[in-house]
Length: 295
View (cartoon, rainbow, N blue to C red):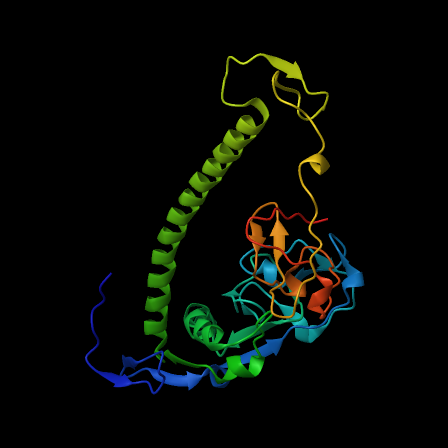
């Protein structure tokens, strides 16, 4: 997509930003917006329905599925008009999609611009510099972002309200088209995943020969299997590996949805409370080709 050029440009003084329109401002986020840190709410007070909605990192771009039954902490109150940043992992930028007020959990921050239009522009402008910060941040575990880094991040923006509105209208319209295309592709991917799983399930429970005689497996969930197949316990075919891990190895996670991943999730982004040990020798080592499962 090509864009018309402005009459004049100038060096922004920011390496990743390069040249910007000559009449635009370049300033740190902290000078044009208020930055509010999330609050460390007690997880014992989390429940599905009682209290105000609680926004965690996983709730960016969605509606919170958790509430917190605590006294209202005014400084942690946010709305769907605020720009929110997840400060662990990939430093995601987004908004909460619920209604009314909600509480912002720890390891997140809220950005409120000097105007509603500027707040919305920040939602579009912040992902690129935060990705640049993420790319140069070294970490052996989960990466962490500080609100001071957000405050110092320099952005470019037009000061004229009419130009701000025109840019927002353009971005809202064009990104909505792209989001619609992505949604259609995601539906197709979901259907293909179902087809893939059905194909695997049939092959490993019925075989490839549709004319093969069948027999009862004696296992309720398995039903009938080819008559010449054997049914036995996994322990007769596999052995459990109990090799000690080491400090140089990443901690893997395993999910029924995404398989094995070496992306280490922040505690605030986990589905349930998990006790972790800093001593990596307490974990088991795995090798390529191993089958792994969670408990």
